[in-house]
Amino acid sequence: MAGHKVAHATLKGPSVVKELIIGMALGLAAGGLWKMHHWNEQRKTRAFYDLLERGEISVIAAQE
Image (tube, rainbow, N blue to C red; front, side):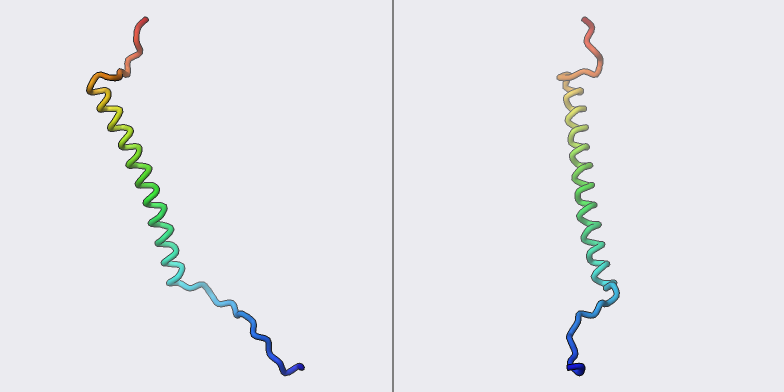
């Protein structure tokens, strides 16, 4: 019985290539979300200035 060996999973060090790929994927995903956020903010700002230019809104408080 003492001569039997049990197969155990051996722990290896970090895979540099795997970590690089995961890091790039996470970076691209975060960058894409950040870019979409900025496009949305830019759209809101452009819409505000378009309304302001057409005279549909005003930034001056109305006198009563």
